[in-house]
Image (cartoon, rainbow, N blue to C red; front, side, top):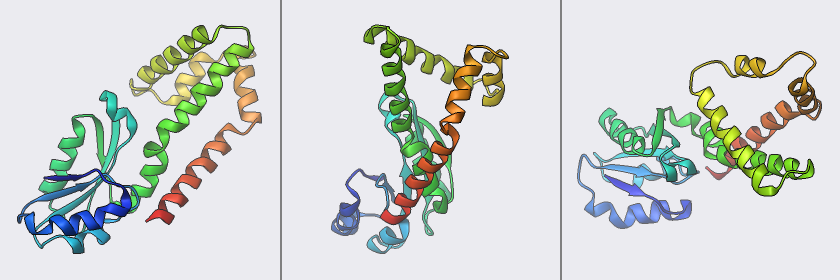
Length: 201
């Protein structure tokens, strides 16, 4: 197995430079965004599988989310091997390559969405009079604990309803988020990431 962890513009040149060393049955796993397998496969010998992976940064702490997509000539065994590799640093789904741009928009770019929400949330706590340290602790633990609840398999809408008393503080907060277009903002943001990912391909 050869793992390509280079910038997108370097993928094909690197493959061309190592092609003579690739044995039949080898698997090339590319972590580069925007480079389709159709651009990589001509640079490798016949009998070499090319697999694309879209990881995300939580892989750094063993909590990554990766999507694996095999090229036209990739064997099922090669795809499974790539999935096993990425399973060492988090969860993995196997998708058709046509869905990689959608994966990029949801989980590839997704950590940045969470970090921006956390940043704004901490700032809100400071504006309400909390120290920055306390606001940071409150937000991070709330995010972490809420993520664990989501892992239970209960639908997010049900979990939200369990926190929201009629006419209460949470209902007031959610009303403000809806009024300011939270759902529409996420739809627009992920669509923008999706379109940009297609442009880079």
